Image 1 (tube, rainbow, N blue to C red):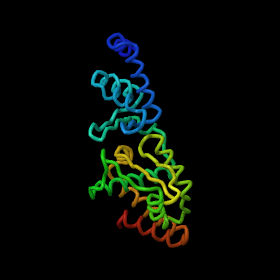
Image 2 (tube, rainbow, N blue to C red):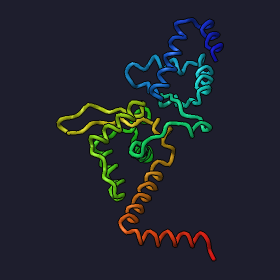
Image 3 (cartoon, one colour):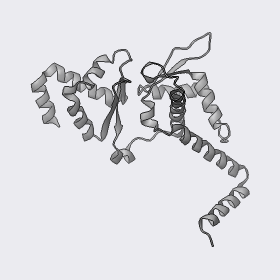
Image 4 (cartoon, rainbow, N blue to C red):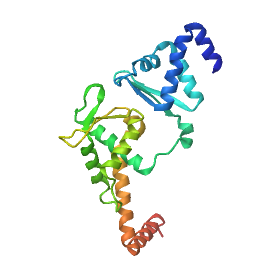
Length: 228
């Protein structure tokens, strides 16, 4: 891999290869780059330069990533290879729920043709938090405050998957731009996965509230799996 970088430097010059290295570091640090963000045009243009396409693909493959992009939506990012997925950092449960809430909201806007330019879904923090509360209210677990939920969204924003606007004093809310890259990490079935999680948590809450009924239910399921 080092030889490939040295060869590219000989072909395109030290300055251009400095741009290539900066682009690699940006993706390692942020995971995704979106051309609409301020200050990212040079990084995006370098990553999409046909002269370096194979160099980027080979470099990230060496460290267990694959590149994914969409020219029409103007984003590019890196994801763990399937073979290395088991060693990938795991999201906490509340982080996973936040991502699935974002992805399901994006998907619903996509289904009804309500996306903005470059397949962006525009919503607000309060709308997303209300959606989150509706999803977990039956699970028996306390829902996150809007402030803690905002903290989770900021973590998602650090990977350029969403953009969070400034606080609007009049509306007491913030705009949130959900970008199409969210589907790359959530999968195409985000809504069904979220509903499955909520159903599972509701069932767990019922069992905790009435352990005897839960035991009876589990024994019935066990018998159904092993017919006499």
